Amino acid sequence: MPSISVLLSNVHKNVPVFNMKLNYSEPKIYTGGVDIKQWSKLSTKEKKAALRKHWYVYYYFRHPVSGRLVKQPHIKGGANRFKDKAGRYHILKHFQTAITIVLQEGFNPYGENGNLKEYLKNREKRIQGHVQTPPQKIRTHEVEPSTSIMEAFKTGLQVKENVLGQDSFKKFKSRVIRFQKWLTDNGITPKTDITSITKKTVIRYLNHVLQETSPRNRNNTRTDLSSLFQTLEDNEIIEANFIKKINVLRAIPTRHKSYTPELLEKIDAYLKENDKVLRLFIQFISYNFLRPIEVCRLRVKDIDLTDRKLYVKAKNQQVKTKMIPQIMIDEMPDISKYKKDDHLFNMNRLGGIWTTNESNKRDYYTKRFKKVKDHFKLGTDYSMYSFRHTYIGKLYRELEKHHSPNEAKSRLMHITGHSSMRALESYLREIDASLPKDYSQHLK
Image (tube, rainbow, N blue to C red):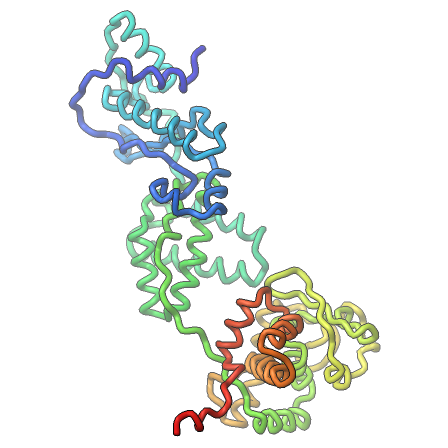
C-alpha cells in the first residue's frame, strides 16, 4: 500500500484549477521554532536545537458544525530522517505545495472521503483512469478536539512543577494565573482554544503589567510566559512559541547601597547588644558572601568547623563548598549541642526545625532587619544584601593593593564563586567596587 509521502509526491503531475470558498488556512512548515529565512544567522547551538525537534507541514480546516478552523494531523513524510536543514526543508516544501493543491481541488477532511491517504489514492486512479469524482458528504463526527487555554496551562504547570524548585514554581504559577485572569477579564475565557492567544494578545498583557508595576516585572513576566509557551510547543500543543520574539525592555536593576565603615561599626554594636541571632545571620552574608536565602537554607550539618568548610545550596548549582574564614570561625557559637538536621537559623533562636518555606524565612529576617533600618533611619536602598556588596567591594580593594587588577579579580572570583570573570567584572562595576585614585593633579 503506497504511503502518504509517495501519494503526495505524485500530486504535481496533473493540477486542475478550482475556484471555491476558502475553508482552510495556508499550509505552513514548522521548522523547529526558528525562522528558516534567518537560518544562516543562527548560532550552531540554535541550529542543533531546531534540528532536534520534529519538522512538519501543518494546516487548519474549517469544521462544518462549529465553523472554527481546526488543526489537522501533521504531515512529516519522513523528512525528519534528514539531519540537516536543506534535506528536511526540501522534502517538506514539496509536501506543502502538494497539500495546497489538493485543498484547492476540494479535499475536505470532514467529507465522506476525508482520509487524506485514501483521497490521494483515489486521486491517482481518477487521473490515470479519468474516474469521475463522487460528491463528498459532510461528516460531523471523529473531530480532533482542540486544546483549551485551561487544559494547555494545566499541562504546562504540571511539567514545570517537576522541573522548577518550590520557590521558583510558586512565582511561575502566580504569573500564569494572573495572565489567565487578565485573559478572562478581556473576553478570552479558559475554555477558549489556546490558539486564540496571539503575539498581539501577550504584548497587550505585558503593556498592562508594565503600567501597573515596573519594566523589571514586565520582563520577568515575559520570561515566565515564554517558558510556559515553550513547554506547550515542546509538547505539540501549539505550533511555535512566539513570545520569545517579543522584545525585552531596558530595566534599571534594584540598587543595594553599600554601607560606610562608620555605619558598619554602629550597626554591629547595635546588633551585639539587641539581636545576636540576626548579627550572626548578617555575618554569614558579610564574611562568606552568601545571599540571605542561602543563609536560610543552612543546617547544622552543613557547617564543618574542623575542616573549615561550608556546604550551601546556591541558586546556580545544587551544592557548593565554601571555605569558612577565620574571622567567621571566631564569631561562631557552640553548635555541637544541636542536631545535625537542625536549621541553623530559626525564628527567634539557633537550632531546631523550621518547617516554613525558604521565601518565608527570608522575609522573616528581612522584616527583622527593618527594625535595625528604622533605628538608623536608613532608606529602601539599604538591605541585608548590601552587606554582601559592601564586603566584596572591601575585599577587592584590599587585594588591589597587593596584586594587579587581573590577579585581584582572579583571587576574588575564587572566593565569591562567580561563574565567570565576565560575571564578576559586571558585578564589580554594579557595586562600584573599584574607584580611581585622586586625579586632581591632572586637572591643574
